[in-house]
Image (cartoon, rainbow, N blue to C red; front, top):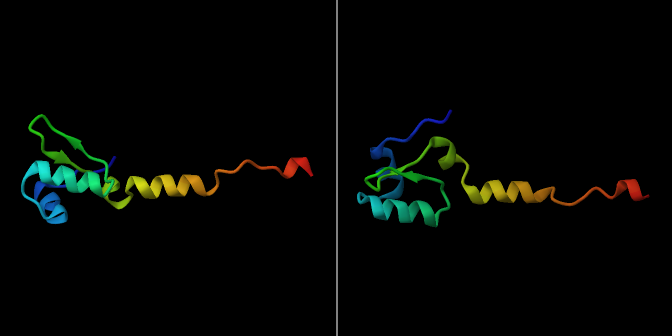
Amino acid sequence: MSKLMSRADIELITDCVQPARQCKVLTDNQILFFKDRNGVPNVTWESLNNPTYLKFAAESVNNEPDFKWMD
């Protein structure tokens, strides 16, 4: 299970204090997060170290079918 980042860590990484701006920075950088009921973003260390654009790029590398059986 991934650990949640502290609010101080999120402020340091996004360079923003306001939760709405933090969410915008995280969204612009394609980092997965979820908001609590106050609108404060919660980010895990796993999602920070592995942004979504890297996950999709890694999956699409071997996205071709194997045609070796047709030889």
